[in-house]
Amino acid sequence: MSNLQTTKVLQRARGSIDLAFKKQQIARMYQSGSSKILLPKTYTPLKEAVLINTAGGITGGDKFEIKLNIASSKIVATTQTAERLYNSIGTAAKVDIHLTIDEVSSLHWLPQETIVFDGASIDRNIRLDMATGSEVIFLETIVFGRHAMGEIVERGYFQDNWRFYKDGVLFHAEVVRLNGSICKMLKQVAGGNGSTSLSTIILAGTNIEHKKNKISPFVNCLKSTVGISFWENKLVIRMLNADPSILRGEINFLLNELREQPLPRVWQS
Image (cartoon, rainbow, N blue to C red; front, side, top):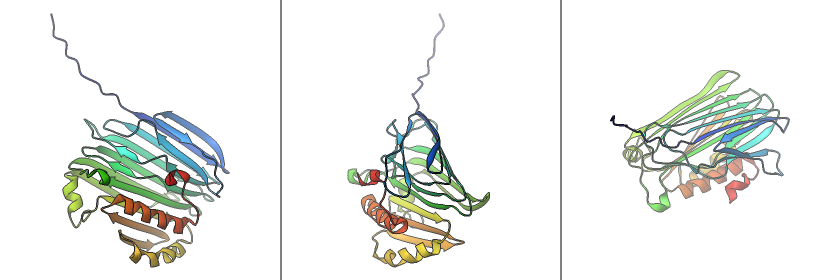
């Protein structure tokens, strides 16, 4: 009699979204697996798209893909709640996001926070393709551990790779890679300097200098550590705080000033 060896196969989440707008109308709407789309009724100039992960979070081996194509439209895309990256066994989770905006369109990419738990492992890639006449407000916020629960992210793997193109020419690129003792890295002065939540807001398009001049007077009044850079009609705002609730409130304030309209309703729930 031969010995049979079995290998336990863990269930993995899969999700895909392919959403396109043309002249403020849905041109394509595809959703599969754990990824869903809601299009709530709005009364602002921007049509709203809410992205949902019904799996409740992301862990090792999961794969998610989001494609968003905006043509002659003004869209704000957000998430129903904070995304959660859980402790992983085996390979890293993969998330690929591709955002495309044509010449006369606007996209406000405003997902809620991504919360990283101890032992999480993820490789995320975000690509943005825009045209000279388009406008983008891009937000990403990462929180390491739940502050209210006293959680500490001792170890993990987090890689975030961004590539932004305008008319096919690369105009912004950055990579964040934390591998191993994330807690120690965040404590270092050249790392998070003790902060466990960090946020980046990027504006690209026209009349961006006006936006910079508008928010600059408020920076010294914020409790978060804030840095602002402006060059070649691109505004980059970096924010760090040890308390994510304070950071979120200050993000809300800056976004209201930059957008001059209310945040998506899911942000207010």
